[in-house]
Amino acid sequence: MFNTDKNKVGLGTFPLAGVFKPIAKEEAINLVRTFLDNGGYYIDTAPVYGMGNVEELLGEVLKGYPRESYYLITKCGYIGIEDRKPLKSGKYDDVIRECEKSIKRLDLDYIDLYFVHSPDPNTPFDETMSALARLKEQGKIKHIGVSNVNLAELKEYNKTGEVEFIQNRFSLLNRSIDDELRDYILKNEIFLIPYQVIDRGQLTGKVFESLNLKDEDLRKGRSDWEPLVLEVISGWVKENLSPIAKKLGITLGQLSIAWALYQKFMGFVVVGSTNKEYILVNLKADKIKLQPEELTQIDVAYGRLKSIVKDKYGKSLREFRGLNEKYY
Image (cartoon, rainbow, N blue to C red; front, side, top):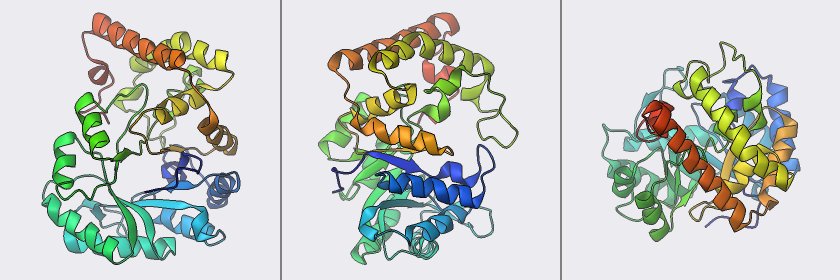
């Protein structure tokens, strides 16, 4: 299905749209090159990242690399990208047209994995899947995936058994894959490609710093970045996860990535960064071995956090962080 011999830490390109801090085009290009030149393989993007700008940037970079040296993921599900007014649409003609636009921006002959970015409640799911199946028949996409779905939506998309991947927000802090969803994707040989496996910095050493988020930072004002939430999470990370990472001689981010890769339903992960050094550090997480004892310690720590939040604030961890029923 996909190349399991490659480094399973992919590059998420959402930060290249300047959503956390401004980033110059040349700096963004160098970040992608750093990733590819150091063994990176999976690259995840979407038309709404910079309203087509990130796809175009990748098109510039990737023309300098052999096609077999990377695996490109992008998405459909929105129209109006050129007008910078994205509207959700899973209609057949829109999916076909937006795929062709992405291929042109990326300057590629085909897309390795094409996700439905988010379900369109106003379009029958089988209409969207029919378009994806057509694109696959034409050789314009190789694999089909759906993103930001719950179990009912996934089952509806997968009525013909054509869904190969899902992409949901997931981390050791955000256990969005419950037992029922886990069992379904394992039974149907569907792999998770999670995003936010380091929870936009909350599962790294950055969480200990006095973060003064700038106005352009996407995290500012989000419910899961409220001061009280951040205080509770950072204290938990420091007391519970840091000792495990220190014992292993790895960073907190590497621990979080390695833990995700140990989940049975995992395909590979995507991690975004605007720092070249972090890209190199993240790539090394692919080789980290976690023992059953350490995996158990992480799960026990997670249970401890749930209990703290329930006892002190009377909420589930999801509710405390202000996340919706899909955990984002």
